[in-house]
Image 1 (cartoon, rainbow, N blue to C red):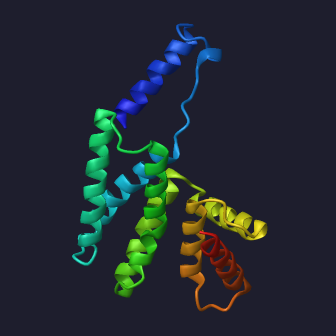
Image 2: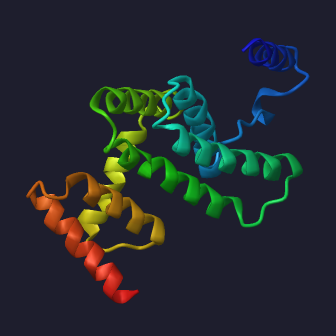
Image 3: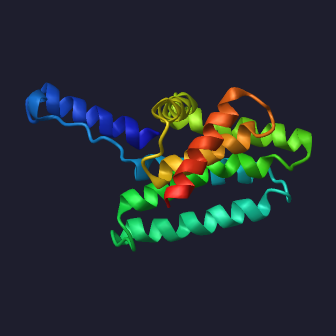
Length: 181
């Protein structure tokens, strides 16, 4: 935190004293890879703090992936485009709650609380964005990409058996996509 404040102070001074013209200052937008890599790293750290043996296989799996990706980042050598890796990380983040479903109720509640706390700390409107994407796909009535397929698949897993109209629409759209594939 202190280095962040120091960097911001240096940047402010450089702009204030004209070393960096304000119009030349560009903020770098985080990519899907950056955001989801950060979420995964924080989730591993926060879920590890819960100290539960039931979560350990999940934490180990995520931790191994994060360690490997950290090596790629450090070496700036990726086996696939960062956008593809980012999509995989996004899918992992979105599917993580499915692993919580089978847990003992008090642990499940704590795991969900930790999950949403991390998401909201990094992307405050993450769930709202996901919901909006799902609604756009439903309104369109057609899946355009594999990531949209997995997004709807996750949504169907959440609402399956509820009997709501959305369940039937999502199921039909998924069926149409699978028939075309």
